Image (cartoon, rainbow, N blue to C red; front, side, top):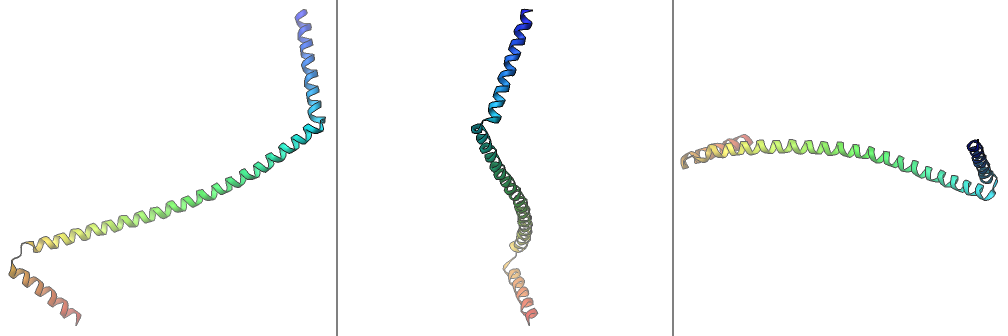
Length: 122
């Protein structure tokens, strides 16, 4: 029985304290103005956060465009490198083909080559 009365008194005290705190918070002008100021600050920060989210979204879209641009440049570089490798291979083949020519064969080769070019330009 003593425990029930003690629990009742403690519960009653908690209710009275809670009501007085709520009364003080809701009806006190100082706290009300503080709450209004805090709510105003929260609203301002929400606007700033929304603005930052919008800027972040734009930056992410820009990044996608830059990645696409860089991929296209990388593909062009790869294509150019392949063309250069092919050109080097063909040049080496031509150099190797005349590497073992004798002097007479070299003279004939260049004579025919430049004679054909001169005749084609006319």
